Length: 65
Image 1: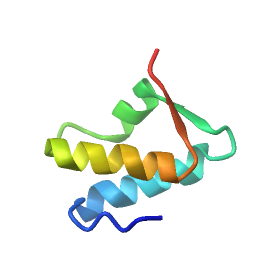
Image 2: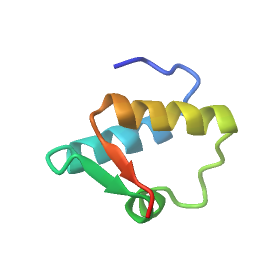
Image 3: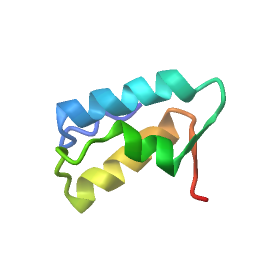
Image 4: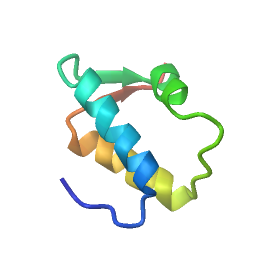
């Protein structure tokens, strides 16, 4: 997996935990993703792009509906 050095460590760790949790299922819903990230996370658009890329690299697809 790519390092994504600009991604805040707390966000990266949360994403890696999600990948572990949902990897067998292979998909995560937007609601599950939103529930994992409290409003306390302030991410730039670049952070969001990196987060989505990390999720994809972890083998998860995002179910948008």
